[in-house]
Structures are given as structure tokens and as C-alpha cells.
Amino acid sequence: MLAAPSRACGMVSSVPRRGAAAVRTSAAGGGGGGPAPRPLPHLPSLRGVLFDIDGTLTDSDPLHFLAFQEILAEAGFNGGAPIDEPFFRSRISGRHNPEIAADLFPGQTSKLERMPGLSEWIAWLRARGVRMAAVTNAPRANTEQMLGALGLEGEFEHVVLGEECARAKPHPDPYLRAMELLGVGPDESLVVEDSPAGLRAAVAAGVPAVGITTGQPRQVLVDAGACMLIDSFHDLLALARDQESGGGSSDGDGSGGVGSGGGRAASSGVRPEAAAVRVQA
Image: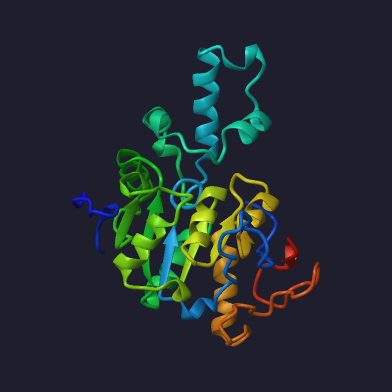
């Protein structure tokens, strides 16, 4: 059921593989003279986690790619040259397109799958009483359709819609509203995002933000303010479990045994084939 939108933001309310592992980044990036990105918090101390939807809960870029390929080819765009993945990444991926969003997903949502490790990460958070919200710039109809296809309708206490906020991402309004609804502050929250605009919104809201590498180059996410890069939620969960078991720092900086020098391997529970490292942005 859709709740009536608030004055500040609209919301939907309900109560209920890649090889490289996590990469820590330095607190550089975020550019533009705005707030500095926040460092990764101590994950077991979190009280709220805020998720982007499209590209974060599910890797929807393949569907976007196919849809844009078909739509733009029919329109004769690109001068007859192939609309390939490099073209898609440089000209389309990560941009906001609410005016044509309705063309992207009808008939395709059955192909959507949860990001690897998402179910386990949500279960870990829920078992510890961490409150969760989804925050998206997608239109209302697409939001409902995507969450339904993923079986996530009841997992979030609130779903905040950027189109019904005074300002959408990359402005901080949607994330500020989500924290207000959950009753949590920036110091006890974490954002997971896949786009530069979403990461900038989180940084502007004062919330530490993890970048998930479903569609954007890693350096782009670092430059937008990501405090950590993950390829799946397994990476985040491994670090959280390591910190909880005493393997990580308890001083609130989330260091958790992650390498503190460029290229130094981590000793955390992140998968050994590509252990977490700090990247100087």
C-alpha cells in the first residue's frame, strides 16, 4: 500500500559474481567544496541502513541496456552506429530518466534478481534490530514494481521517493527524510549506493556511503564520496561479522582489520582472493 506523501518527501510505507572483494577508500573525493565524505562506521553499531534500489538491490543495468538499445535504435539515434556497452556506460548508465522509466521494466521484471548477499545482509541487520529504508529517484510505479519482483515489499519500514521530495538526489533531501522517518542520525547510519548522484546525496546528508560496483567505474564511485567499495553484499556482511566477532576495531571508525596502507592486504573476513585495501583517492 502506498502511504500519502508527506510535505517533505513521498514515501511507500510497509512494516514487516564478481571476483574482487571490498575496497576501503580514503576520505577524499566528494569534490565540489561540499561536505567531506564520512569514514566507514563500525558496522555492528549501526541503527539504520538506507538502500538505493535500482542498481543496488538488483543489478538492473542489463535491462536498461537492452531497453535503451532497442529504443534508441528505433529512433535512429547514434547515426546507425552500434549502441554497445561502452556507449551505454558513457552516455546512459547512472543518469536519471524518469520520463522514459515506464518503458524500461514492464515485461522484464521477472528477470530481476536480488544482488548476491542481499538476503543475508538484510537478515543480519534485522536480527540486530537495525532499521531499514529504501531511497530512490525512480518513479512510484517502478519502485513498487521492482520491489515486488524482488520480493522485498515488506523488508523496509519506509521507501522514500526522490520525485516527491523538494529536491531529489544528488541533493540530500531524500536521505535526510529517510533518517527522520527511521529516527536515526547520520552518525549511526549507512547508505549503500551504486551511482555518483546517490553517493553525493549521502555525503551531502552527512552519512557514510558504500559504493556497490554494479555499473560505474570504481574511481567514479570513489570520487563521488564512497568510503568503501563492494562488489556484492557478501563483502559488507563479511566485514560486519569480523567486526562483531572482535576482529575489527571498536573505536567506531570501521577499520575492522582492513588494510590501512595502499595495497596492503586485509586480515578481515572478506574473501581472501582479493582482500580489502584502502585506496587513496
